[in-house]
Length: 85
Length: 394
Ligand SMILES: Cc1cc2nc3c(=O)[nH]c(=O)nc-3n(C[C@H](O)[C@H](O)[C@H](O)COP(=O)(O)OP(=O)(O)OC[C@H]3O[C@@H](n4cnc5c(N)ncnc54)[C@H](O)[C@@H]3O)c2cc1C
Image 1: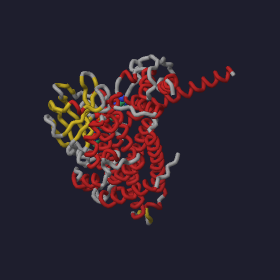
Image 2: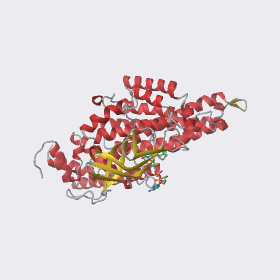
Image 3: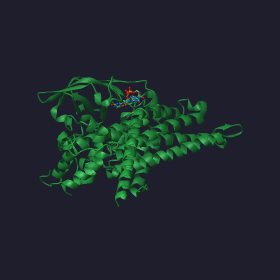
Image 4: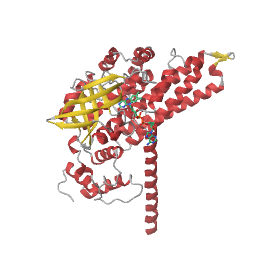
């Protein structure tokens, strides 16, 4: 899987929670007000299941979850894909 | 969906049932009257590997799968909702550490949670903060390598006896979850008695009076206490409660089937009166429906599907409402006997009411379920529009 594929899947997942609104890949998800504990947990499970690694204690960093690109970057790093977007 | 149990799960259920029949059912009403859970019984469920059942083998537990844990909660819930709440909070503390603890914390605490040497407590609710749980007022300040906690927690299940609590607090505007030991300086508890239900769940108020906790007792990272540590724990809690409600309702149904066969009015057993059969038919059907939701949540949990969070919420919501209705109907079938403490159905009814309030009240579940409904609807509409567009282009 490459960065683009990860970003597309992440975009699809995040969009489910936006009642049809479009969200750009760089949009700050925390600023949209959509991030609550329910979304946070679902996002963790999505990343773990979709990309096949465990989100750990030390991964709890807002910068890993701030935007769709940030999520894709984070997943890419965990999967050892090297430098991305 | 495949909901057939494996041979191991069947065998485990048989053992849980046997334990509950022998060691819990005959005594649960007495514990309820005494408002206490005997230490001996807690020791027994710990010794059997039940209480710490969620701890994986690598940390000294038996590593129960989701269905086996669900079956255990169902059986314990059939015997005593108060004891079920001990399993619930122990599971929440285990889940918090397992998911968001670091390796040192896992090594340190999980083996002792597995054996029951440590009894866990979950301390979120406060006198001024219930459903709006992300706004706790307890303060945590980091000073010279220690957290200092100031605040009060209320309604903490097994707070009278637990020796390790996951405590939620605010630290400079960030939510933190801290592991707090009972014997730490500045920590005290006061028993709460006279509750409607869960009377032997040994509730307590917790006072954190400059309570001093090592810096290394932070779970996860600052800012992620409520959302991630609390989120994982509450999901686990709702899961245990959903299954426990199933057991509670099954207990109320079993009692009603037995009673309606014995009690005679108008020259025949109650069970031959069709209006009683109607009540029983609805009880049976509602219980089956809740069981399907619990199995569905179990299957998603086992696979780590993101939708497990919503489906567990739905299972908890439905099962607790169902348990409240089924236990109320059980009291109805028992008449005055059902209102007496000589029969367990009044306890089931009182405990079922609590199930509708804890682990996120049913109003909180309704809010998130409805919100989820709108989100799914929007996705469907979007897909429909998309496929029309695609069709148009073709
Ligand atoms: C037996 C028992 C054991 C417990 N054990 C624990 C424990 O171990 N640890 C712990 O931290 N807590 C525990 N609790 C506390 C429990 O989690 C809270 O009672 C629960 O979260 C609800 O909070 P509250 O009671 O303050 O009700 P409130 O939040 O004050 O709500 C009161 C009512 O208003 C409704 N309501 C609130 N907000 C809204 C809204 N926005 N829209 C519609 N309706 C709303 C609620 O659903 C409820 O019906 C326990 C409680 C009981 C009774």
